[in-house]
Image 1 (tube, rainbow, N blue to C red):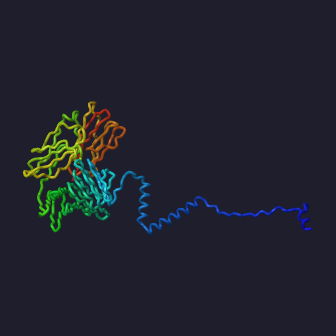
Image 2 (image 1 turned 60 degrees about the vertical axis):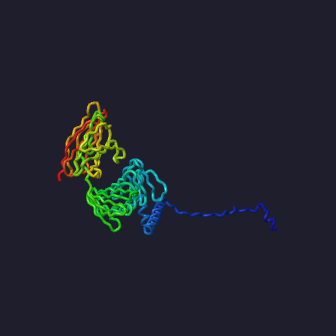
Image 3 (image 1 turned 120 degrees about the vertical axis):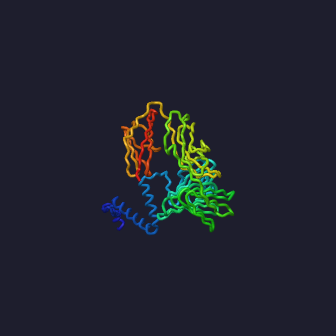
Length: 427
């Protein structure tokens, strides 16, 4: 009976019940996600600041540099690094953590323990963060022994293994500079200029002070040096001190002076300098490089002047050394630069000086020239010349006294012009 009931087609079956799943969610906007991300980032940086504040500062510095759009190719000069500002000829560096010598370039930075070596035709000038600078002569090997510059003081030190170095110390009284040779060290005081030579074969060294002062120490020996004094250090002998010849003061041609001529090689350039007491002769040197690695003239003269011809157009550097009757030489004089400019055969250009004006120790020169012309004032180019040819130029701060300002121009036709004005800076 039950089976009939189950198979009875008249029995109506209801629809099958389907199970349902209900899903609930909360809508989250992009603003909410950004807010949560900022809060999480702030928590991370806060933790980093309290745990490692140095890391936090470094991150901020990198972000600041990136936003500021700094030069990505430039190598920053830190408080423990120095850099090259002049390179000439073969100059190599061996980093403290390396066994290889590499050619130096202007991107090379120097750290404590690095070695710098110049070849027979090489020279280099390096500067430290406190503005102390060293000029490394040819055939010289130098070690950077100390370079620590902080907000309160600066300490730099180099060792001359062999060769010669000229140096100029910073003006800050908190700057400390030392140069060592073998077992001798010289403390060069601020705002001083000195030269140091070392010959390891003869075990001799020289410390000469051109300006300022220094103290030379070897063991218990201490010798004070003033301007134009020299300490001679020899193995097995006491340190000796002696006076040296002062270098000549240069007169002509003036520093950064242009010499305009139609035929450079046929033009005679007049060189003149002031006499030095006790000097019997002089050595005039002319070079095409500021480091004097390529001498084109090396003249020994009894007079204090000379006329030199046969120079091509271009930039030149010159200095003079005095020699006494004992064949002892002075330090090298200040180096002056001059330029030989070829005068164009076409009509000379327009160059009018409207006037000058003093702003403290800075001189302003203004005038008018031809549109598109190039101007040089005391060896420095005028950056901005108006579309109508008007120009204004501000010099570097000048010392009290009389100064000659030379303006040289050249137009697109090859024509040249020269004007000279005199400025008197009051004391």
